[in-house]
Image (cartoon, rainbow, N blue to C red):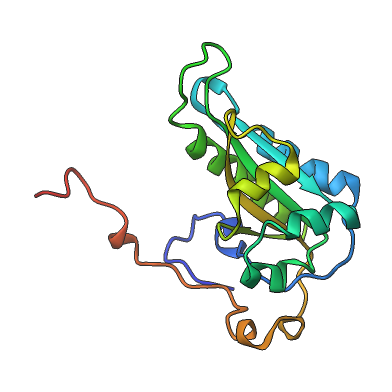
Length: 190
Protein backbone atom coordinates (compact mmCIF):
# COMPACT_ATOMS: atom_id res chain seq x y z
CA UNK A 1 0.00 0.00 0.00
CA UNK A 2 1.14 3.55 -0.72
CA UNK A 3 2.16 5.65 2.23
CA UNK A 4 1.00 8.93 3.70
CA UNK A 5 2.38 10.84 6.65
CA UNK A 6 -1.12 11.60 7.93
CA UNK A 7 -2.54 8.74 9.98
CA UNK A 8 -6.08 10.17 9.94
CA UNK A 9 -6.33 10.25 6.14
CA UNK A 10 -8.99 7.83 4.94
CA UNK A 11 -7.22 5.01 3.11
CA UNK A 12 -9.67 5.10 0.19
CA UNK A 13 -7.76 8.14 -1.12
CA UNK A 14 -4.39 6.42 -1.20
CA UNK A 15 -5.74 3.03 -2.33
CA UNK A 16 -7.45 4.51 -5.40
CA UNK A 17 -5.37 4.44 -8.56
CA UNK A 18 -5.94 4.27 -12.30
CA UNK A 19 -4.73 1.01 -13.81
CA UNK A 20 -4.76 0.27 -17.52
CA UNK A 21 -5.06 -3.52 -17.27
CA UNK A 22 -8.69 -4.62 -17.13
CA UNK A 23 -10.43 -7.97 -17.11
CA UNK A 24 -13.16 -8.11 -19.76
CA UNK A 25 -15.63 -9.48 -17.17
CA UNK A 26 -18.98 -7.72 -17.25
CA UNK A 27 -20.16 -5.65 -14.30
CA UNK A 28 -23.60 -6.13 -12.84
CA UNK A 29 -26.25 -3.51 -13.40
CA UNK A 30 -26.33 -2.93 -9.63
CA UNK A 31 -22.57 -2.31 -9.49
CA UNK A 32 -22.77 0.20 -12.31
CA UNK A 33 -25.80 2.03 -10.91
CA UNK A 34 -24.13 2.18 -7.48
CA UNK A 35 -21.24 4.10 -9.06
CA UNK A 36 -23.57 6.55 -10.76
CA UNK A 37 -25.51 6.96 -7.51
CA UNK A 38 -22.28 7.90 -5.74
CA UNK A 39 -21.61 10.51 -8.43
CA UNK A 40 -25.16 11.83 -8.03
CA UNK A 41 -24.40 12.89 -4.45
CA UNK A 42 -21.42 15.04 -5.41
CA UNK A 43 -21.42 18.73 -4.50
CA UNK A 44 -22.03 21.32 -7.20
CA UNK A 45 -22.58 25.04 -7.62
CA UNK A 46 -26.23 25.86 -6.79
CA UNK A 47 -26.73 22.07 -6.57
CA UNK A 48 -26.94 22.17 -10.37
CA UNK A 49 -25.38 18.69 -10.83
CA UNK A 50 -24.22 19.57 -14.37
CA UNK A 51 -22.62 16.20 -15.13
CA UNK A 52 -23.99 13.67 -17.54
CA UNK A 53 -22.47 10.23 -18.03
CA UNK A 54 -23.13 8.29 -21.23
CA UNK A 55 -21.95 4.71 -20.88
CA UNK A 56 -21.37 1.66 -23.04
CA UNK A 57 -21.57 -1.97 -21.95
CA UNK A 58 -22.79 -3.81 -25.05
CA UNK A 59 -20.25 -5.00 -27.58
CA UNK A 60 -21.68 -2.71 -30.26
CA UNK A 61 -21.66 0.38 -28.03
CA UNK A 62 -18.18 -0.40 -26.70
CA UNK A 63 -16.79 -0.49 -30.24
CA UNK A 64 -18.38 2.88 -30.99
CA UNK A 65 -17.00 4.40 -27.77
CA UNK A 66 -13.55 2.90 -28.43
CA UNK A 67 -13.52 4.73 -31.76
CA UNK A 68 -13.32 8.10 -29.97
CA UNK A 69 -10.07 7.16 -28.17
CA UNK A 70 -6.55 7.91 -29.32
CA UNK A 71 -4.71 4.85 -30.62
CA UNK A 72 -2.58 4.67 -27.46
CA UNK A 73 -5.60 4.69 -25.16
CA UNK A 74 -7.52 2.27 -27.37
CA UNK A 75 -4.60 -0.19 -27.11
CA UNK A 76 -5.44 -0.86 -23.47
CA UNK A 77 -8.93 0.54 -22.86
CA UNK A 78 -10.50 -1.80 -25.40
CA UNK A 79 -10.38 -4.55 -22.74
CA UNK A 80 -12.51 -2.61 -20.25
CA UNK A 81 -16.08 -3.91 -19.98
CA UNK A 82 -17.47 -0.39 -19.48
CA UNK A 83 -16.58 2.90 -21.12
CA UNK A 84 -18.14 6.12 -19.89
CA UNK A 85 -17.98 9.53 -21.51
CA UNK A 86 -18.38 12.32 -18.97
CA UNK A 87 -19.99 15.57 -20.06
CA UNK A 88 -20.71 18.82 -18.24
CA UNK A 89 -23.68 21.06 -19.03
CA UNK A 90 -22.46 24.44 -20.25
CA UNK A 91 -25.34 26.55 -18.90
CA UNK A 92 -27.31 26.59 -15.69
CA UNK A 93 -30.73 24.98 -16.04
CA UNK A 94 -32.40 27.62 -13.88
CA UNK A 95 -31.42 30.70 -15.90
CA UNK A 96 -29.50 29.62 -19.01
CA UNK A 97 -26.40 31.58 -17.99
CA UNK A 98 -22.94 30.06 -18.52
CA UNK A 99 -21.87 27.74 -15.71
CA UNK A 100 -18.14 28.29 -15.36
CA UNK A 101 -18.00 25.75 -12.50
CA UNK A 102 -19.57 22.87 -14.47
CA UNK A 103 -16.28 21.17 -15.38
CA UNK A 104 -15.06 21.50 -11.78
CA UNK A 105 -18.31 20.00 -10.48
CA UNK A 106 -18.15 17.17 -13.02
CA UNK A 107 -14.65 16.43 -11.73
CA UNK A 108 -16.14 16.10 -8.26
CA UNK A 109 -18.69 13.60 -9.57
CA UNK A 110 -15.94 11.65 -11.36
CA UNK A 111 -13.98 11.40 -8.11
CA UNK A 112 -17.03 10.11 -6.24
CA UNK A 113 -17.55 7.51 -8.95
CA UNK A 114 -13.87 6.48 -8.79
CA UNK A 115 -13.85 6.18 -4.99
CA UNK A 116 -17.05 4.14 -5.01
CA UNK A 117 -15.58 1.89 -7.69
CA UNK A 118 -12.56 1.27 -5.48
CA UNK A 119 -14.85 0.46 -2.56
CA UNK A 120 -16.52 -2.23 -4.74
CA UNK A 121 -13.18 -3.73 -5.81
CA UNK A 122 -13.37 -2.04 -9.23
CA UNK A 123 -11.06 0.44 -10.89
CA UNK A 124 -11.47 3.45 -13.18
CA UNK A 125 -9.06 5.22 -15.47
CA UNK A 126 -10.07 8.60 -16.88
CA UNK A 127 -8.57 9.62 -20.23
CA UNK A 128 -8.18 12.99 -21.87
CA UNK A 129 -6.87 11.37 -25.05
CA UNK A 130 -10.03 11.27 -27.14
CA UNK A 131 -11.68 13.03 -30.06
CA UNK A 132 -14.28 15.42 -28.62
CA UNK A 133 -16.14 15.86 -31.91
CA UNK A 134 -16.44 12.11 -32.33
CA UNK A 135 -17.63 11.76 -28.72
CA UNK A 136 -20.60 14.01 -29.52
CA UNK A 137 -21.29 12.08 -32.71
CA UNK A 138 -21.10 8.65 -31.05
CA UNK A 139 -23.27 9.60 -28.05
CA UNK A 140 -25.75 11.94 -29.70
CA UNK A 141 -24.94 14.59 -27.08
CA UNK A 142 -25.40 18.20 -28.21
CA UNK A 143 -22.02 20.03 -28.20
CA UNK A 144 -23.78 23.37 -27.76
CA UNK A 145 -25.32 22.12 -24.52
CA UNK A 146 -22.50 19.96 -23.11
CA UNK A 147 -18.70 19.90 -22.90
CA UNK A 148 -17.07 16.49 -23.38
CA UNK A 149 -14.69 16.15 -20.41
CA UNK A 150 -13.15 12.68 -20.49
CA UNK A 151 -13.62 9.00 -21.26
CA UNK A 152 -13.50 6.62 -18.31
CA UNK A 153 -12.53 2.95 -18.56
CA UNK A 154 -14.10 0.87 -15.80
CA UNK A 155 -13.77 -2.71 -14.65
CA UNK A 156 -11.88 -5.18 -12.54
CA UNK A 157 -8.11 -5.04 -12.60
CA UNK A 158 -6.14 -7.60 -14.59
CA UNK A 159 -2.47 -8.55 -14.47
CA UNK A 160 -0.16 -6.18 -16.32
CA UNK A 161 0.77 -8.93 -18.79
CA UNK A 162 -2.48 -8.25 -20.71
CA UNK A 163 -1.11 -4.82 -21.68
CA UNK A 164 1.05 -3.91 -24.65
CA UNK A 165 4.69 -4.27 -23.65
CA UNK A 166 5.39 -0.53 -23.52
CA UNK A 167 2.66 -0.06 -20.86
CA UNK A 168 3.44 -3.00 -18.58
CA UNK A 169 6.15 -1.26 -16.56
CA UNK A 170 3.83 1.71 -15.95
CA UNK A 171 1.12 -0.50 -14.42
CA UNK A 172 1.79 0.50 -10.85
CA UNK A 173 0.28 3.19 -8.64
CA UNK A 174 2.08 6.44 -9.23
CA UNK A 175 3.56 8.50 -6.46
CA UNK A 176 2.28 11.95 -5.59
CA UNK A 177 3.96 15.32 -5.66
CA UNK A 178 4.92 16.69 -2.25
CA UNK A 179 2.14 18.53 -0.45
CA UNK A 180 4.29 21.68 -0.30
CA UNK A 181 4.25 21.81 -4.12
CA UNK A 182 0.48 22.23 -4.20
CA UNK A 183 -0.47 24.42 -1.27
CA UNK A 184 0.39 27.95 -0.20
CA UNK A 185 -0.75 29.77 2.90
CA UNK A 186 -1.75 33.36 2.32
CA UNK A 187 -0.23 34.37 -1.02
CA UNK A 188 2.16 32.92 -3.59
CA UNK A 189 3.66 36.39 -4.18
CA UNK A 190 5.17 36.69 -0.69
